[in-house]
Length: 142
Image (cartoon, rainbow, N blue to C red; front, side, top):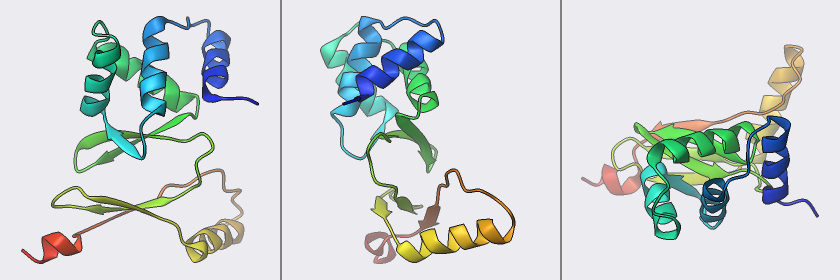
């Protein structure tokens, strides 16, 4: 069975890039996270495993993970987060503009209507991203 490590190693090899101990640590730490993780939090967790990893190495490696379709990058309220993509069900996001709370959701009608719109305009849907910005109920109370 193919896993993220195999996919990433193959991706690097195809681009004549090396599989380094730093990239391995970054991938391991990233894959052990659930949901979205801010780059600063990821750096902190990576440095626990390998204090020599710097922010530039982390950003470059995360870009490679995004390019290899193993991760997705989001910018919510001016903060960059990453989430795992491989073998994760598709979902969309609700984001609070005040506190930054994020809720992942799925809705079959959204998926259905997106396909209908693509068909109507002669498009073949390859991927999509939906991010709905608003104010969560906790922030609405204030």
